Length: 230
Image (cartoon, rainbow, N blue to C red; front, top):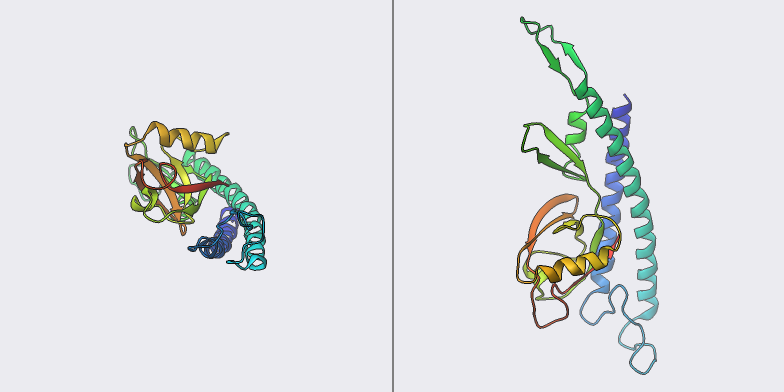
């Protein structure tokens, strides 16, 4: 019963988070249109006067709303991760228990996992599934995005290799979590210039595997995109 209630709550939270992400992506897309200032670009011209080519009150309102959505997204994501940890623990506990299956004439012991389906249902939303090389058992790895693509340039290596605005990064090469993430992302790109880097992202609730090759191009950086740490 506990697992069922946690599952229902988590699925509801995932729906809310998806709605937040859709609104966030829409705002980011509007702020990143050609000529727009982006998520963090300046609102004054080279002489220090307010830019006349953009609607500054609208931009400020959009940025304020984006900040609110990010805070809500962070809180919901933390709650989702807590719930998934509970479900994951319940799954491990149930897998360790055994019972005599009355349907087996030989009286063999059968393992039961009452929450396996519950956890598996969430794989498309928040959980990576991997097979252990030493076992056919499925290892459910709880994973949380640590960065998001909040700016991306047209015709950049990032775009050409499949990254999109709003993609959330689960893994970029050897970078998955921890401290100094922006510095580590930059170092990972520089140390792999010209080589394909495996990237795992979440896009609209779906886990996607990509390879991105950092390289020189006509724009700035080796990828042509900006990551915001979540």
